[in-house]
Image (cartoon, rainbow, N blue to C red; front, top):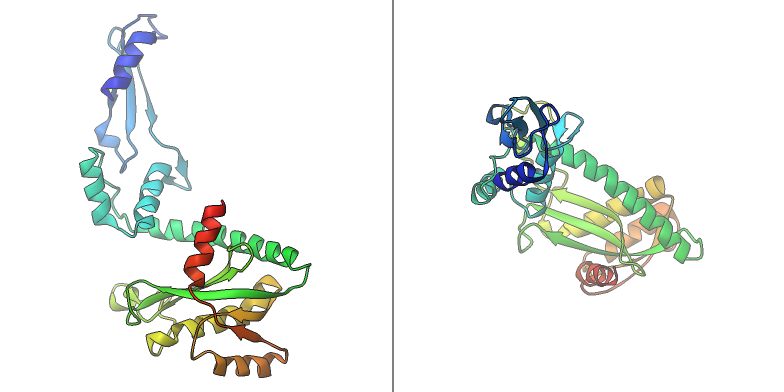
Length: 263
């Protein structure tokens, strides 16, 4: 702030008294909202002042606070990490009720991800000579190492482009259910059983909604999964069409790494 104030004093004049070397910028600490601060520009001669916020607003929330929450969430951290980061960088403390920004980010990310996956599906169909029976590579990842993790994600990717066509988050635990204050909420627990069966369960969910959501049919599955062949027969009987699967290794890692390198 001192650098900006010095710069203004050297090159700007007060529009009220036309004096050079007269403008001083300061912060109105009483109106601080997280990282969003109110800058006050005042003339030391005529004492005329004007103020401006350091961030735009979107739907009643400051953009800079949303970006802080998004950046912290992208590295898998929360409010405590945000406080540490701001303290080390000599920034104002994060906004109070930091967790409420998670809901804002979730709604936005769901909207963007759905649009991105919809475009990826259409690109896959186009590369498949407009045939809407497509091949998808499936693989999963865990929040923690090993098959004892409570949370996991299963993705379906296009073999040619490496783009994600759909994904399914599976959880054996709901944090809000443990909180007595959150009686009315949507339970986040959507999986029962041993963690090793989570991948096959996620594949079935993606397969069953593919026609309804994307107007495509997954006719070939590439996945290394020992328990899946028995489920393939059930899908064939239910949908009355041929469905094949082949074993592959490391789809989730290799396909996405290849795609990132290409772009």
